[in-house]
Length: 213
Image 1 (cartoon, rainbow, N blue to C red):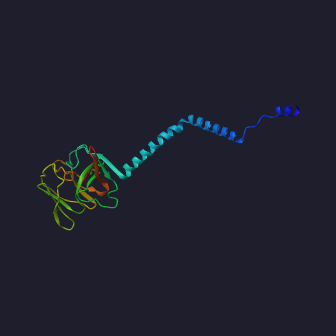
Image 2: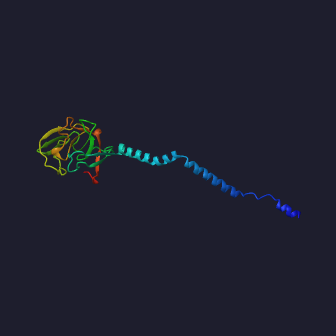
Image 3: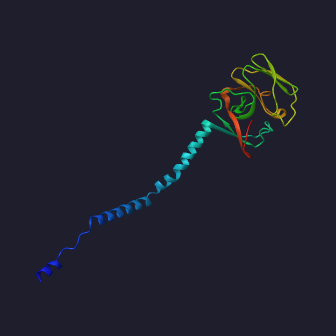
């Protein structure tokens, strides 16, 4: 009888150590979930951070790598249509000089708040002259050449202009729509300095995607 009484009075079994750990983990997880629910700032940061990074990258690309423009006039028809959206590379002339026939975006010499789009016709040190719509260039070696005009498809060029002596580190610009282009022939400051060239036009992205040559 005494043995039976002793068994009845034995203390209750204690929880095992693994069970305590599981309870502790559940409590910690519940506390963490509760903390997240009470932290709307973190939700806003998580939402905004990718957007901010994307905007910064876009600004860096636009400032350092690419320039874009909407062409408002028909001075470059038919190479570039009115309303075309174009992209130019700002890196094109970092290590290379602009070349004849390149289509470029540049600061308009008579008002540098505006950007223009034209084709390079005369290079530094050359003399440009237009006779009956045909462009002739006297190169720095003294040789006079007639420039190709296969990109002039919108009109038959007319008129006599020049001669124009291109200064060093400057360029003579003309539009492909020769009879309706406000270009070096008519500006007060007729030449564009290399440092004022924003970039070389590489393609149109709207309303259709195609290279600019």
